[in-house]
Length: 374
Image (tube, rainbow, N blue to C red; front, side, top):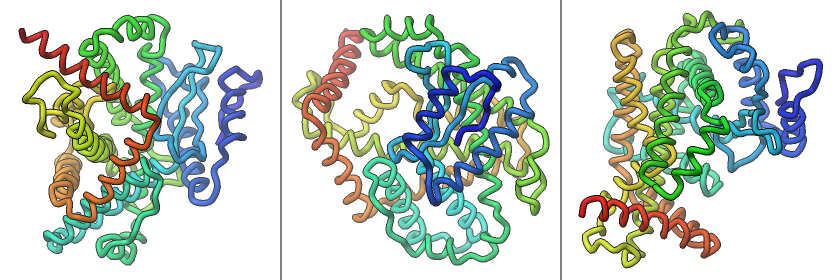
């Protein structure tokens, strides 16, 4: 979708139009794109803070690409022009996790080992659909969610999704407003490339700043647009939305970490440290040496910053939602591990040079840590 059209087209607007024509949304993806269109208009109308004009200049588009999550990038050839990109599959997966979460809230007395195992498998299927682009299979849990007329009629999950999308949009915008895409920030990032620990720390600090600025503004927004859920007071889940989003991100992070760590163990001779052989150790390195903080670390950072100002209902929902998700991840069964093995094998099927490059980068991080402790 292509929404904000100033009288004189900017390079960002022209680039956005080109991308939309190249990757159009269809079917279910088009429905989610239309929802985002209403929400970005709402955010632009409601935004009264600093950088208001900047927000109005940045196109936000939903592209029909299965390999796209959410990002902000500069326009090729125009380093001062930015554009925000969203992949519909990312929103669809987030929405399904929200629907499952609300079903668990409503039917907490029915939650047992079997339900949690299904939840774990559903999370792995969401991960697989985002990374392997494979279709999902229904489980007893998703059938129960689909058959729940009360949940469907209330559209409570849709209301929560609205607030999650607004948080995601604001997070990407705050990268621009905070100067994270400026030439000086990019120059600093390039200079730190040869010092992995400092490079990743700088990158994660930028992500944390964007999270906190986005959440702060989200909590201050006024009433929702008319097309929002008429059955619920505006902002019912607003305070919980950043935590829902970070829980989803954290679940996907965790599944990627353990899959890649299991794969890396097959190549442990690459690493100089003889004791660097268990999956947990590799996951710890991955968490601290990623451009983005681990999703649940982002969750905790937001709770530390904003938890006291949240009402009890939203705080409890944010906590319970995260607990359900991680209980599900602790109950992964043979179905889940088969899918995760497929993901690891897909990595192995990548061009050898790319995989070896990633492996050598991780080895360099480990060796850097060794030299720092000697």
